[in-house]
Structures are given as C-alpha cells and as structure tokens.
Length: 182
Image (cartoon, rainbow, N blue to C red; front, side, top):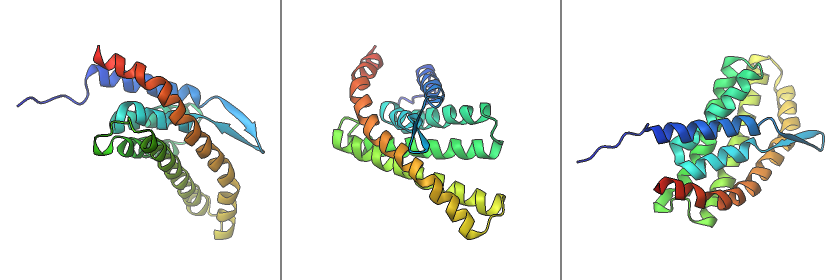
C-alpha cells in the first residue's frame, strides 16, 4: 500500500503562489456606489477551484490573513479573516470536486462559486454583528444598522466573485492541469 504526503513541495509552492496572488489582488479596489469592489473573493474562490479544498483554502486564508496583518488589524480579526476565507474557498472546492467532478463541470463550478461567495457574506455579517455588539458594545439596533450599511458592498463583491471566478477558471484551468502532468 502506497501512502502519499499531503504537504509535498508542489503543494506548498502552489499554495504559496496562490496566497501571494490573493494578497496582491486584495489591494486593487474599484469605487462603486459609495463602496469599493475588489476581486479578492474571486481569487479565494479561484484558489478552491484550481487547487482543491485544502490547498485552495489555505491559499485564500493565508493571503487574506497577510493582507489584514499588514493592514494593521488586530490578530483576532486576522484569524477570523483566515478562517472565513478558508471556509469560502474550501466550501467552493468541496462542491466543485464532489462526486468525482474534479472542478470540470461548469454548472457545478458556478454553483460552487455562488455558494462559496454567499457563505463568505454570511460569515462576514456574523463577524460584523459580533464585533459591533459584543466587542464595541453597540446596542442591537445600532449593530444591525452597521450590518445593513455593510451588506450592499458585501453583496456587490459576492456577485462580482460569482461572475468573474468561473470565467477566470475556464481560462486558467487548462494551463494548471498541463503543469500538473509535467
């Protein structure tokens, strides 16, 4: 019986390169409707589609964590970002790779992107509520008002990720698969 290592050099390199891409893409923001659209969530979902649940999840979490650390956020928020971005990419990949699909079913990839993006919105809103209510001590109505103010930008970013991720995946997947064979 042959056992394979999970953390091969290839695994570490692909995870690290994708984490770096997530980190860099997070800096690019487009002003829209009083908020900013970014493609960081699309990169997190793309990590899951390209590299599967573990490598994709780690790349999404590590890249986003590093962005937050460098941005001066406290360690708890950075860890929450790591976990929520990991879950988004992991969930996307679990769906895309389920039942032997190996992220080759376009409909499943779109569904995976939608569910992954929406899962992040839910996690981000939950984090916002907990921070506003229990860390900053806002009353329930004020905490809900902050959530309501943040929801449109979160949904815009989610929709952008849902649209962009499957398109970029179709463009990059053949090259990535070719590299895996060499």
